[in-house]
Length: 255
Ligand code: PGA
Image (cartoon, helix red, strand yellow):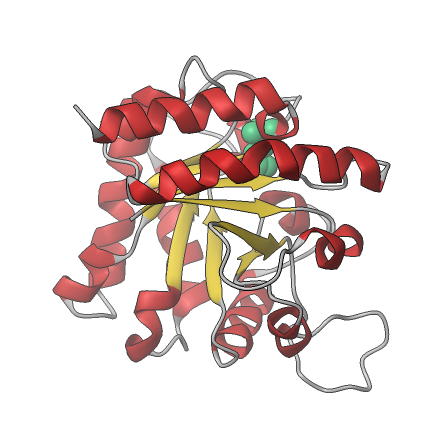
């Protein structure tokens, strides 16, 4: 299975726009699924319940964050169980924009181990701040993997997706795009780091996605470099752009 995941961040401002986007994506999600591509949308939570349809749906929904705890006394938090109960299937954890406002690997680790107990699939985001000629960024990403997953149970590895998102390539302030080769090298390092803790077979089965300024022009190059899918920000809010990304992914499965 490959994954095309839209992260809407704090957009759009109006629920009607969210509804329109979801209705634009529903039909293609069905076609994509028949080519083993799962489409997932992660809207702001406030809209999600109104967007999730009843029964089995080809378009899945994710949350952009989750509480580190299941304790009901934690004001302002939303638990993994609550997400699960409204029909959410995926949770993004450790996105760089959350790390920017103070989320540490230790917090990410707690969120992962707590969320996994609820039967949700977790999407762990990792990525270096910047690149340096000595290659220290490889160590930065390897440490994010080690410290975020140290208490992750091996028997839940099938519910883990990793998204490699170099911070310098994410969002409107991105300095430039990552190359497919950048992705390939980092995916190799991520898999090798996973094998320090988990069996080789299970480590190699963890899907590794690419994210960071993905658009319809560059999406295919990351999939061709072996990405198991894409985590798409801005382009998932533009209907034509996101549909084109999914269409290209579908076509490439038929080659
Ligand atoms: P972007 O965002 O595609 O707008 O760079 C990606 C993300 O933040 O997940």
